[in-house]
Length: 500
Image (cartoon, rainbow, N blue to C red; front, side):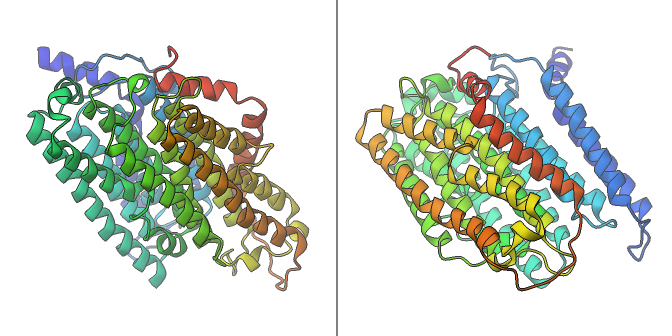
């Protein structure tokens, strides 16, 4: 009976995830009965599955809004303010990604595509909720395995197959790094419970084995963040898969990667609370170097790209470097918390990045999807609304006003500078310099849309769901510039600075 009571209490903390997993099961079980042996199905089936996915997400959002929050660390899950924030971010991004996928999914594979996306969202949330290394790893794998399927379903050509295989193999290696690092942690402390690890961390933290374990975990999770030197798969994969899959890869792996790091790293330094955590040497030095190299390499190589998707892949690498600034600073800064700045920035980036990929999908024609930067030439004359919305999103990614990206980068800069250390000042200067570099290639795309003449005449295709996703993202970016305080308060609550 006590075990049943604990199981019932644990299930009560994950109602949104139960809704998502139940929807995934329904989709996988029902889909084969609606498709013939030859892959034929009724026209418009993807619309029905898209509506079902949206309804599932809205039900999960409703359950999330009323979910209990507690700092209690008993049991396999901890539904604290940090988990609440990550779950909200994941569900919002999930709704936008569903809209992008809606226009690109094939009728015969729509159920599997939407099911994989919902499973990925549930995996991200399980990582944020987990109070155990086993739960964190299972959540990471619940993100990885459906991703392989989703990447393959998006396109059926040799580039998609190559991209999927490349991501599959490298993801397996990254999972091995993470699992090996967790095994070292378990070997030192004798438990996989994060709260118990925190209690024993003071004894084992000075040991060299702890540093090796953390380096293995950071290396494995850096693959998901697309942080240097585990970034090299991103351009080929982004170019080879569908735009909806590229949008997913640009955001959700970063969310789950940072969620895992913010669950594991603090307890290894002896604290469960993010409000009291900051990385100690030599791990901090490693993170500083990763952040600096990631920012510079991503932005410099992005400037050389003529393919839009490869450019955005390198841009995604650079944004991972910006976010790592907040991870390095931790909560040591006085007025501006690095963790809160990280959470604020990943939210702004996630919404704007998905919106940009949605608009790229919407801007393409039936026979000519947007791939090269030249495909955007004259877009302001042929499709002015898309060009304007895309400009807003590009301003958001570059960190220029009047968008939420400006507030996000400013928060990260202030967090690094106010830390008061040499590492913090270096990170602040590097971040500012890279923001200038990034603005060059983002503004170049805007220049192509507004100042170059298109040399092709193609019949535009209306993709209403992508339009909606892009419009929501652009509007959200503008709103977050005018009224950012509510998101900043939520990020500070997630970082443990304010009461939830």
